[in-house]
Image (cartoon, rainbow over all chains, first blue to last red):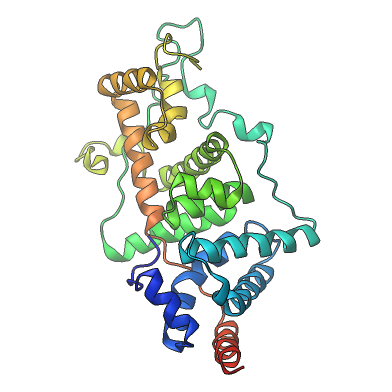
Length: 226
Length: 84
């Protein structure tokens, strides 16, 4: 999860920012900008535009920190400004990401129907023969873990924008369901549909990388399970 | 897909319910059937486990960075604003 280095509690942080503590500003800037960049890129069309949205957000934070009332966490307050800023930009670039309703394709099944026994067959609705998920062999080695993360990062970039926004907040940033719904102004049910779809897409990318071909089961086939 | 408590949870339903389950967002009766299915189906147990591994790996992502120029610009802006 992002935020590996501990930030001081909000009261302390806000106090330090208001009194012009440059070290405190550098700390929040460096801790949050990465996640902000990812989130912003779901609303705008280019990386450059996402970076500008992040910059504009920080400028607004610098000017507005005196007005922060502490009704949400500082980070959520900053993210709210970011979502607003990035959405405005996205609209100008004709790249709007409305969250109010689901697109038909977003509500479709996340696993191909051909992997299950069809209705009318015996054990209908169960995994078809040879279609059960295969065991994974995810590397534990440090360098190879980096390779896996790289794969996930690429898959994340390839997600449709709405899916990317929800997945970034939930699984990269570690926000809870309620906060994400409030930040993106979306219902809990729709949020879960988008999150589920995004996770399923990432799972199948990992699956292609980590699942062993059938003939390689012989030695320690269960290793990937736990 | 089963709507209310009545229908069984089959594999084809299970794979669509994983996020609801992990979020604790299932009606009690459906959750009971989900867990029952999980206990009896190794394919779905593996699917759930792979979901968890996917989520865990996503949580390990190292953050992107804004460019050095942007960073310097913002640090200077913070300094400048405080002086006003």
